Picture 1: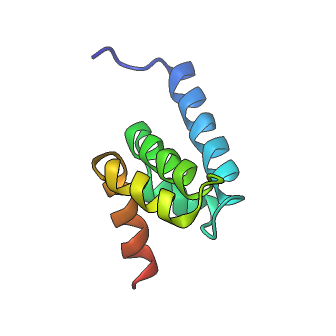
Picture 2: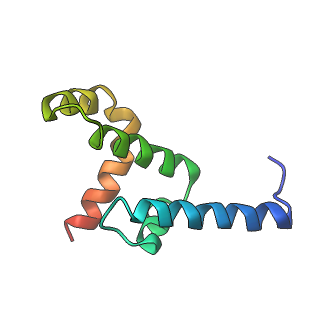
Picture 3: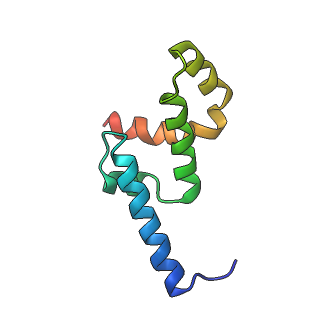
Length: 87
């Protein structure tokens, strides 16, 4: 894998910070907590998938069914959140 340029590194950091700020407005976590819990792009994608399910307009039974069908996609995010909440 090629190394990131200095500009790429700065851009990546800025993107992560913006992502964390946006997500913190949707959750009870701070931007710093989100950056710490979900440092990698794949982690953030899992979290977004989970948030999409939870915030959908479907009733709870449909949300549960969707979570069951997508548990392999969102299990990492669920575990990280649960560990943070159950301290």
